[in-house]
Length: 125
Image 1 (cartoon, rainbow, N blue to C red):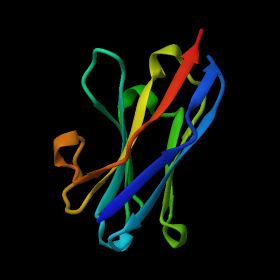
Image 2 (image 1 turned 45 degrees about the vertical axis):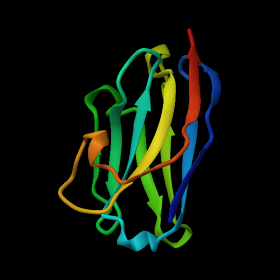
Image 3 (image 1 turned 90 degrees about the vertical axis):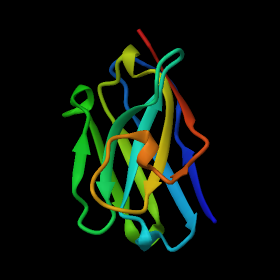
């Protein structure tokens, strides 16, 4: 069994920063191919935000967060982070981390095998 637990959400003002964390446990984390962050705003589909490969540490971002968000991992601690800077009201959503067992890189939520419960990020203008 795999567990992913997100923390770090909250209410901030536009321009502020937040750091989300995702703690992975259960199945040997090194067996994941990648861990991604997704978000879902009210009334919208869940969308890809960023992903990092567990082995090589390659990173990929959706265009709207490039230059503002940074995904990173700590293999020893089985942690993945999402540093979010220059937050905008349109970043408001529930943020989820998710693990995918196999390559290739995927930006589709349906391709991820395990999910956390989500953490709310609200950015006020």
